[in-house]
Length: 491
View 1 (tube, rainbow, N blue to C red):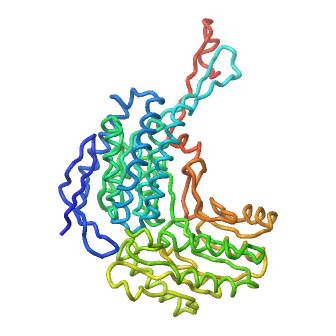
View 2: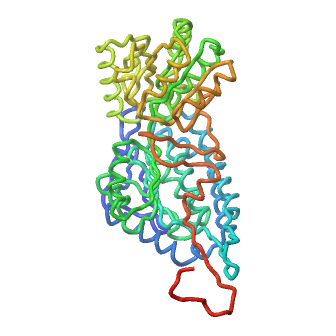
View 3: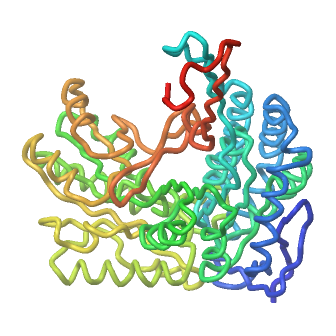
């Protein structure tokens, strides 16, 4: 039996739900906490509270400067409570404590960044072609935002939505994934402590078939910001169609990492390991397709094999652990099935491919490398969301670029070379929203992030993010007292 209970946060109150479910600790496979399952009625209450706060009351009357100060305060609270939030995220998702601590401390910077920008998002005066008119363009909050995030890095993925949305003056209903919602439900306590007005931020969790479906199809929701997989994204787009809610989608990827023979191979090997085995490969930007120049393939694979087999797998709460469990049993089973299918179809197993023998409990899976002869294998084409690296060789730059772009995804990529001109050519040619050169898996609130194709629509992060949560209002003021020349002719 679980001993810890969490509640939804609706209309400024921590609310019990009519039904609950148990959250599983991935390191043991056992329940550890009780979570609220938001019903359709709970979703309606949250959206209606957000709509009231948007239209009237303290939040609606608040200046942009005051909103910014609240966001800065929230960022400070997140940083101050990073240790506790990290322990919850690690317990509920299996992500190692050394990363959750660092990542959540950095999440505070996202709120501080958007807090600083809240009163710097300016309108415009347009000197138009009519002498008796003045026109100003004012940015206004787009409305109630439904933010939907997956279980991996929930606090981080929430910050890139809440930060700009609240800075713009929107109100938010944030749905935490039913897998690992503890850190976001605890984060609600910090929202409350920071002093956000009632209804401005609501945080719930529940299942997609009722909670998620109702939230993303609610007629009072003007904007949906989603991070997750393409199949769920398609359902969300269908849900938003009737009300024409503006939608951004940050989806998955099958990101290529291209290693040329002239690269620093030790540095590249470290980055490849970080790209696929950090976070147990459960990242939308995981560098899961290694493309390596044939002349150094064997040498590079030997380096990777040594590094992969030296990774410390274990209790995610132990700071010495380098790779924890997968987040769910179904994810573990799916990865096992795809790896087995890929090997039976001709893939060469370099290392891994099994659960660690000393990890009978929990959802652990060994770092796995599979060499492929072409792009037909399932491990090459499908996003696995786990610690599985597929490897293909190339002979020249043109072939490397063609292989990199042979995917319906387009989120992230990496290029390793000592040739600056080659790096620029590859960065220009790769069809992805992010290209890392001689590094991998680096983020900042100052930089736009997103993909195209099956990797999504729109961008998050950077200055433009606030603009995406606003709509413009053009205000025309006639400055002449003379009669209108001809009321039946548009001027």
